[in-house]
Length: 595
Image 1 (cartoon, helix red, strand yellow):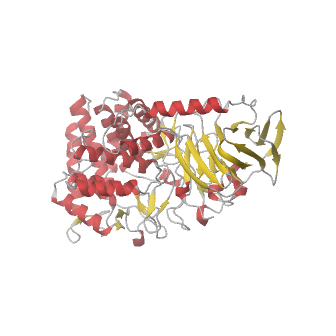
Image 2 (cartoon, rainbow, N blue to C red; image 1 turned 30 degrees about the vertical axis):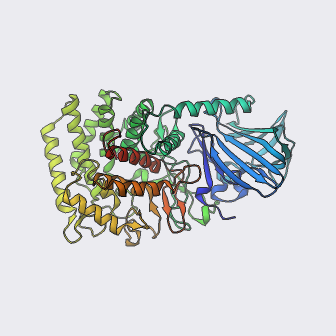
Image 3 (cartoon, rainbow, N blue to C red; image 1 turned 60 degrees about the vertical axis):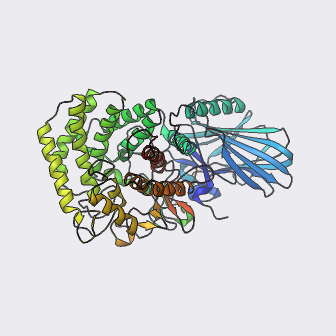
């Protein structure tokens, strides 16, 4: 069977995550953190790289959904013998990370197979397996997993296998818990109690959403995904729970996204604030400040979930990759890149937090002021840009605009909230950057701003110029750039980041439409007064989500398949933000364009 990225659903315990295939197999899970080694890695390989299947033995038709307002997954199977439901959940972290799976009989009598193939170290390490009392314990090096079920269980082909039948009203529970191999075994989990607590947690959290405008159901679902991608101990939000899902099948654009990008700072903050989640917004802001603290001369574009700086990139040689897309990467070398836009993202996040009542922080301002001092000189330098190119540095337009944002927000923090800074100096630099961008990034020949100074290429990030306040939406250059980007970067009505066939990023050609950029187009159209066109595109984008409301990073409209790491926080943030902006332009929203 040919797998698709959209075949998967997300489980999360707010410290790590699992992906469940529509046919009942958990094919990806890392313990104990999002960025830990995978113990189920079949997503990037095959059965022998680790998975946990629960499904009817006879072929059947599966439909699935999340239980109302939660990340509790319910999959119903129709088979010739009858109907069953499989409930999957990861309880918000207690003492240890765990997965609970419960099989319920709905009608008839159905024979079920559970097949647990545990492989530590991204599918490479076969653990030792022992039967201890009423549990099976798999151990290898620092990792151990305890598996419990009342179903009859045997060892088969280096797997733990249970076969059993359920009839109407019967239930069969399974629990799996990770723990450090040197530590005592965890207490047995009550499956029904854990399920009740998990459902209650998610429903309580999702009910706090204060947004009641258009597309509320889609907004709430995306907010739940963002919460599921949050590392609860620190408040950091990972870009995705996966690594190396390809941006184009068979290609090399396969990256590890299990880290936290500063580029998401402002958008994440505004999405949470506008939805009423001030505590989460404050935790994200605090994570951001802790991550960059202590080394302001070397602000990175991304950090680990606890603020780790070293994210060395290496290749998992033994995994064939999703759809044979190699290499499979762990770590991300882009952490060492120089990207000027992060200064704007961090300063804007500080400003937006203060403007929306998240709370003042003098140490944060002292750091921000020092950072602006660095940017006084660095803004003139080329960089790798928003798309993290792995070739020659350029003077990217988006990077320069975000440098302008950094000084603009620093000035606003002084003017609006009484912070102290060299205002005359910052105003002069802000004006210099603005004049330089308008002069060097504008092409009379193209009638548009361009991707970088002197370039003939377009870039979807140019749509952000009015949204960050660099130019007003009614500026003729903004309108002309919107028209040019929409005309030249359109891919079946969606939007590419840029044309990869023009060898701008040092990688082989080929990728799908970039979903956050397509949502930026929604925002740009709404700002341009084309609300109906914006709403129509937004609804097309909603239709790209899979059956449980999840989005990847990219989409191939010709093959109707999601591409890239999944689910993607940036895509879901952009979805929520566009819903807010559509509501605002319709006269009933939260009040500002917040890209």
